[in-house]
Amino acid sequence: MKEKKIKKTWKNKKIYLCIFWIILAIYISIILLGRQIETSFSFPFTVYQKVTRTEPFSITDSNGKKISAVYIDKHSDKTIFYFHGNGENLQKIEDDLLFISNNFGVNVLCYDYPWYWESKDSPYYENISNISKIFYNFLVDEKKIKKQNIILWGYSIWWAVAIDLASKVEFGKLIITSSFTSRYDMSKAMIGFVAQNFLLLPNSFVSEEKIKNIKVPTLIMHGNKDKLVPYFMGQRLFQNSGANKKMFVEIDKSWHNWILMNYWEELKPIIENFLNDNFENKQILKIWE
Image (cartoon, rainbow, N blue to C red; front, side):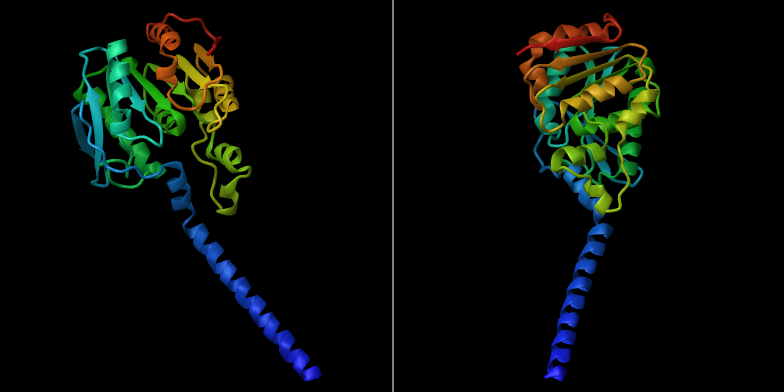
C-alpha cells in the first residue's frame, strides 16, 4: 500500500514537472518573440490598396527594401512631412493628404511604414528611424526645401516616429494629433498593466521625454473623449514640451479618429495661424462640439 502511494506521488510529481517545463518553454518562446509581438500590436499589417488620386513613388532603404510614399507638390516653400496613424496606409490617408495640401496650400510628404501597403522590411525602431531620415533628406536635397520650412505632423501612435526624427534633425514646426507618451503608458491604458514587463522589453518610443528637448513652435490637438489614446497623454506631452511657443487644443467630446474632418471649420484658422506664426504662447483652446 505504501509502495503504491509512493509510485502515485512520484507520478504526480512527473506530471507537474512536465507541465512546468511546458509552461516555461512557452514563456521563453514568447519572450524570444516579444519584440515581434509588440511590433505587431503597435503596427498592424495593412493590405495593398492602390493610390488613385496622387502619384506614388518609392525610395530604397539601407536594407535594400522599397518604401512607398506620396509627395503632393504645391510649389510652396513650406512642406508638411506627415506621419499617418497605425491603422492606415497611403490609400486610406490619401484624401486627408490632399485635403491638407489643398486647404493650406503647402506641399505634403507621407510615406508608408515597413510592411504597410507596398513598403517592405519590418517596422522596428532602427528601420523606421533610418527611413524617416532618408525621406527628410529627400525633402532637403532633392526638393530643396529649407529645413526651417519643414513641418513635422504626427498622428496617433506614429507621432512617436515624428518625434524620433524631430530629435535628430533641424525643422521648423511640430504638429501633434491624438498622440501618446510611451509604449508602457499605452499598454497600461489598453490592457491595464505593462505587458512589456512580462516580455522583458524596455520602454520605447518615450515621446514625453524626447519632446522636452524640442524647441520649435508646437501645436498639440487631442479629443477629451479619446479612449484609444487617452486625453491625459496629450496634456502630458504639452506640459513636457520644451517649445518656446506652444499651443494645446482640447476638442470636446471628440474620439480618436477623423478629428481634422469633423472639426475642420474650427481647426482651420488655428492651424493656419500656427503655420503663419500668428498664435499666442501657451494658449490653451477648447473646441466645443
